[in-house]
Length: 554
Picture 1 (cartoon, rainbow, N blue to C red):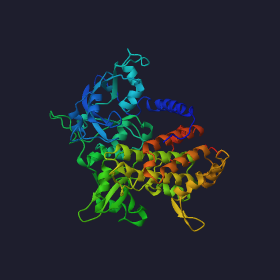
Picture 2 (cartoon, one colour):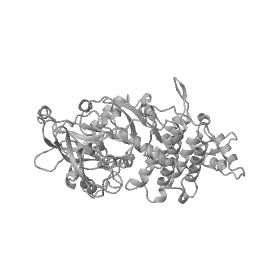
Picture 3 (cartoon, rainbow, N blue to C red):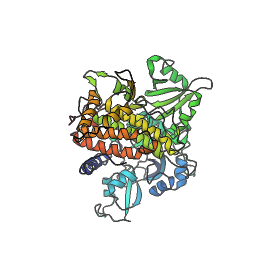
């Protein structure tokens, strides 16, 4: 499928600008955590870095072990894997054992890396090493090398941030720190659960109360217990109990076990007051707000699927709760802004009046959902068909980042053709984002209207005025709540993409990879026109992003 129309000058400029801004933000010197040491400090120690499996190069234990120059066996045992031949999933979190040492002023774990074509200190530190170091530190560690004239095959030392405990900390029972790069959607409580640490210890060790300032920076995690050091390879049997291993990687199949009594107490015995969806309740457990879904026995397939999925645009399964003869629950992260359906089809009021999803937000929501579906279709093994993509199953977090929820209809795809069901549903979702209408509703004539048929009437207009009549029909069809503040060329491109997704012949529908590419181009192009909105530090720091600089439909 051909890419949607965009200026040939737009995308390179956007990518260059984004790359420059991201380099400044993500590669500033480490914040919060103290990596300093002195002659009185412990000079070296065995510890770990946390590392996410990532395509295309680091989706197997072999390549990751080669990157860090450690044995495959040590990663397998540390991460509780059964074999190096078991496939990893994108975003799966592993523990990589390292030797941390003091260079006189700071702790580092030096890893030698051989430069390949296209590499730079910045690219290797952010991509291969996932911000476990930064380019400034790499440059300082290699004073004899010119970073601007690196040759293929040059061996460069990449110092990874780490730290050994002090004598006082060791005496208090703290024997190691795990280096972990803070992720966009992380919360202190959930990170603490992953590593058997306490939120207070993480906050104190990193001198942080607001961890949004250290997103994409390494932090130190002080687990409660030390590792087994009885001469055997590094293991996590004492560090991370079974109930926490699934917090590190849902693929391990051991979700956190929650107490049914705690859930019943937090929801006042599943009171309607705490109900936020069909069989879904809000609960505050140990100070953390969670979404609790009551399930039937046949929902075990949903749990099996969710346990091995990990993606920023999928609602995260936190754990389960069950009694032998009592109710069973799936415990999810709580997503604060509720369903997309609520925002599109119901007026939300605030002190400033009605809040409407603006054009750029709708584009980003579409791209978020597309990214989540691409992960399910093309990166999960086996491929997963969600089977129920609709606005009520798309939820928005505090920054209006979209996540796919409700996997009760999900199943492994028996064939590539089965995935096209999700493509059609995604096309309908695009039409709802464009029009603000429900997928199916009653027209004034009394007939039932379907958006995927309506868009054909809007776009299939053979006129001789260069498409002016079609654009006028689309303008009238668009969500009136946007008050015309959208670029008509962008709206037309999105409408054409939606129509292509809802072609009746499944084989003619695009793949999610094609959809993600087109939406990425469209979002970048629109963001360039929205002066200052896409890279505004003010917007990035705010919890809710409702106001942007609009572009009147032209």
